[in-house]
Length: 148
Image (cartoon, rainbow, N blue to C red; front, side, top):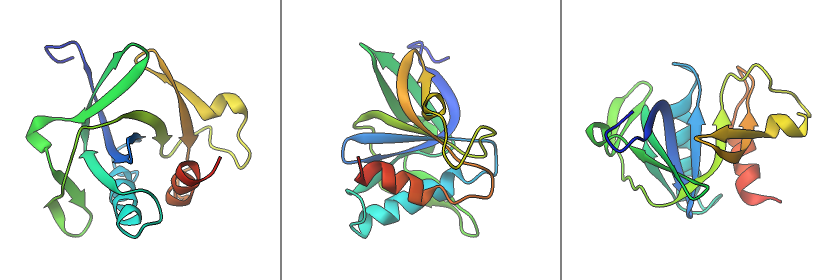
């Protein structure tokens, strides 16, 4: 916990329009890769413009039923790109968490039950996408952001 009683977790996050996508998963599961792929999808116009919130460590805080996320100051504007190392990338902390993506999720299914598509983080219930190990999460997140 930080001094303002916020939780810091091992995760990455991006903001698309004003909606933050929180990406969780074990080390090596592709959190940074998905974050950068979403940034590229935003640049290509596939989804709204998308900016890095943070990579590797995210600070969470809930207030009035809304979950906020921000990167840790030491890693501000930095993202790991496999094969290139740590790179600098535009970043922001504007927005609230609208989606949680769980990579290498043991409960991922082709047609997940409704309860698998929700999670509670810091007491805030949020939509969730469980992604099985070895499956590409990008189309699922793009579908969430562009369809109803």
